[in-house]
Amino acid sequence: MRSERDAEDVEKAKAKYTTEEYQALFSYKKKGKMHIMIKPQDIARRHRLHNKELVYWDEEESEEE
Image (cartoon, rainbow, N blue to C red):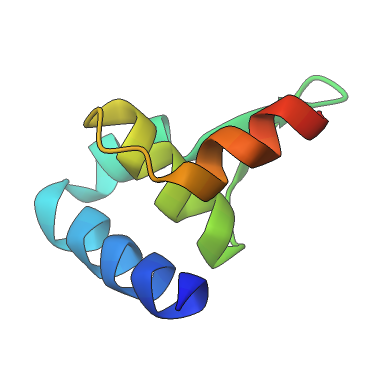
């Protein structure tokens, strides 16, 4: 169920944003270098967070970190 929802939200994110917007929103900094997210669950979570559409497992994961 989670992976299906994540896959749907990744597709929504790809359709919603231009390439530049997508790269800016779905990137992170590691050791001073910018990297584009590749894990579907990370992209989906960031998309839901940005659109205030969090699901219960997003909140569970943030408590574990």
